[in-house]
Each structure stands twice: as structure tokens, then as C-alpha cells.
Length: 208
Image (tube, rainbow, N blue to C red; front, side, top):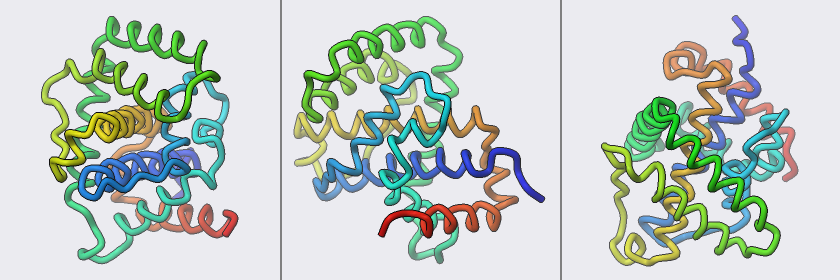
């Protein structure tokens, strides 16, 4: 059985898993890859888009997300991360809470629009810091807050903390996108083999 929108749902999932992987990498080891981070920033700022691919610039930008997603849903028990599963559950709660708060959505849209008007003059780190502030002014207000595990030296570093918040922000964006496209955890469970084939199709079609 084919699922409607499975192609686009898989893209949204890859974006979500790239966000979660980025959070863990920064929090535990301080590892940060700007190329992998650019599509996450872009996904938050690209409020209106006719194409799911455009939200992440292009699919090559989220290849790490596809590869990590494949490991998490197809790999053996040793390659699966309970931390990633916890982040995904927390991001879904946060996304659902946001959708019930129209005032917060309006504020977020206003702040993102203001940021977009000046975006060309900012460096990647400056964009990250501004998105982190928007996250703090909106999503950080909700309970329960997402608990990020990692090394204190990275969690307390201002720029790394901004990167983590921005990755979580992009994770909420990806979660909402996944749900808007008809995605759900039970569909992923029931049609895992269909998603696996779609992931492989995308990875094989990418530049190596």
C-alpha cells in the first residue's frame, strides 16, 4: 500500500532527524557543521513555500538527516538512540502546544518577518543568535521545556546554546511539516519498509 505524500513526509522526517542529531552532537562533543546547519536555519525562515524540498534549500543539504534517519528506523538496536526518540517526543509535545496558542504563533510570525527583512546582512552565527532569541521569546515559555543532555562546557557556552535552541526550533518546524503532510508515528511504524525504500531512493539520487 502506498501512502499519500510519502516522498514529502520522508523529507520532513530527514529534516527532523538532522535537527535532533545536531542537538546531540553540539551538546555532547561541541561538534558543529555549518553546512549541515544552514538548511535548519533556512527551514525556520522559509515560512511560505510551495515545495517541501525548498524548505531545506535542496535535498543534498539534508543528506546527513536521511542517513541518520535510516540508521534510527532500519538499523539494529545498537545504532538506535533513545535520546533522539526522547527529543522527537518532546518536539511533538512542543509543536502541539504551539498550535493551541494563536497569540504565540502571531508573535513568532512577526519576529520571523522582522528577521527576514534584515537577513542578508547577517552572518550564520548572527542568524543563529537571533533565532535563538525568538525561540526564547516563544517556545521556551511552554512547559514542559525540552531537557537537553550533554557536557556542561557546551551547554553553557552562549553560541553553542544558541545553536542548540535553533536546532530545536527547526525541529518544531520539521515536526509541524511532518504532521501537515499527514505523517504520524503509527504510519512510520506500519509502513517502515516503504519509508526505508524512499530514504534509500533519496540517498542514491544525491551527489556523492
